[in-house]
Image (tube, rainbow, N blue to C red):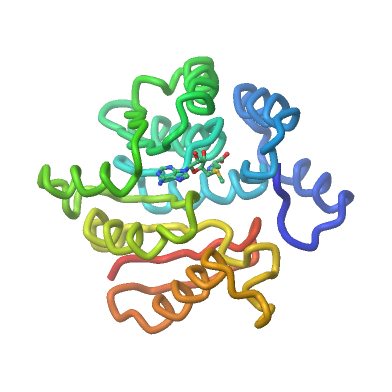
Length: 223
Ligand SMILES: C[S@@+](CC[C@H](N)C(=O)[O-])C[C@H]1O[C@@H](n2cnc3c(N)ncnc32)[C@H](O)[C@@H]1O
């Protein structure tokens, strides 16, 4: 699990105790993922709690997520969506890994939200374009993007098509462990994150706020 940038282990523990208790399936997902080699890809528990509040504020009934991994963020979102909308909530979950998303399904099943999650294992851009072609423009309340950074601009444009006015879209890792502020760093990932930050701050289609939650969370609200 990642933790918010710059937090001491004591503050991480304090936050864990200050936030509402995690669902047992979220705890199992976090603890089992912590033993995996790519564990740092998972969002932190405090970010999950924050996203749940945002999903609630957006009254999320229909949502998309790009980048599932072992399913923690999708599970946090789906739990909130199902509590808000016991009938009709749907979360479109996109990832390219069969192996990781098989684990995710197991946690979703344990939590009783598997029935509201449509997992599509394919490049996310294809999936989003299919949904746009299927007349789903403006049908989504909430989106979370946490996958390949060079794809963020394309996900942003597709996301703006899919969201309703007032809908909320979040981009993870926008501070990239601080590398975005290091001018000597010009990798494609870092450059893509900087370009998105420049674009969203001047984009009249949205209201945006970049925060230092997790590894940097960019919050966009559709006008
Ligand atoms: C940082 S992890 C996601 C972490 C997850 N949100 C969580 O809470 O644990 C990134 C994920 O994006 C997926 N991914 C990478 N490129 C992708 C693409 N083009 N389309 C869909 N998923 C992709 C990876 O397989 C990986 O599972």
